[in-house]
Length: 427
Ligand SMILES: Cc1cc2nc3c(=O)[nH]c(=O)nc-3n(C[C@H](O)[C@H](O)[C@H](O)COP(=O)(O)OP(=O)(O)OC[C@H]3O[C@@H](n4cnc5c(N)ncnc54)[C@H](O)[C@@H]3O)c2cc1C
View (tube, rainbow, N blue to C red):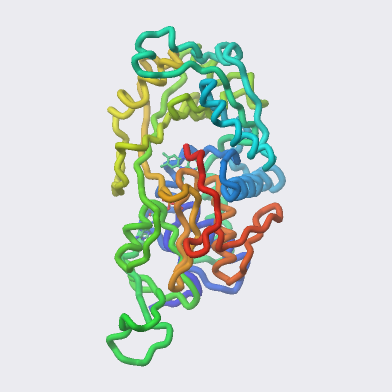
């Protein structure tokens, strides 16, 4: 049986960032990462819309996202590592009443240094949005609302997730971290912290720790700790050993629509909002989001449906054509009629790993095992900070220093001593 100091289960963005920061903190520790898929980031990391923002309600989320984005930006701007970052911003389109209800949140965010700007309906009409939808009887029947305000958040944008995964994987190889793909954890080894030498150990009355993993390619032992970074698979992997975390999988889908006519190209290449002259990531009144992919002259369109969508894990989630036809298309085409008759040329599905209690990520240690997850649809933009918090937990530091120097108490994200404000802006 091979022994490492640290074993990390999951080679998604969180597992990779975690390995990197543990190696920065404890360079002599040996690390093994295992993943059941064929390569790095093949789970939900590759399914993401790869958009980022520091526009969150919870201070913890603001710090996690801000410091991670700054870290990525430093790599791209100062270290010549192209992560495909484009600062195109986010644009939330909403009615007066929705904007009014956001005002207290915006005030709080301003105190955290988050800037925003508003646009009038006539500016938005110029770009190609239909703001007065209530002229349309169908829109009234659908209970849609007019767009009265465009709320623009400039410190936000899009990136290329495959480039970030590549960055971490390359670094980890140089740092001698072992990565085994096609290696599925089937169970954990539980041992007493103080063995008494009887074969049936551990007994229920003993203090127990998790000390290794059983996989389809053998058993591996961790001298120090095991990190579980399995995203949507968290519950199914940890339930059998009685570790309970409030992280549940919910299916999420993205549909690719090509800007195949002049009016859609005009929308995609809108010069109004940013230096890149690209439409910001746009969120329509009912929550449908439109994420431009300029390199493909396309839009990625998604919608995080809530009530009515079960918390279930699908091993090979497939996009549902009907979800596009009945769930997205009717609203999308009311606000952006240029999409009428446009059919998806591609689509995919994955899961959010949702922290169903407060929507903020969890870094929790129990019985020698550290769980990191519950990223609730925003793990790419928080991965570097979470990796640093896991690394601090791993070596027993009370505070983790995030990129840029801000310190955060590691246990603030734990379940036992959690101290965070719930998130209100999960998209
Ligand atoms: C449609 C969609 C859009 C999204 N958009 C965004 C966005 O714009 N911005 C953003 O920041 N985030 C977004 N997200 C969320 C983001 O993708 C996740 O937060 C992030 O990828 C989570 O990373 P992870 O490493 O925790 O999980 P994953 O990338 O899923 O990695 C977990 C890994 O664990 C492995 N694993 C599981 N069980 C086992 C086992 N038993 N043995 C071995 N290995 C195992 C899996 O194979 C997988 O590779 C989106 C997600 C979806 C689905």
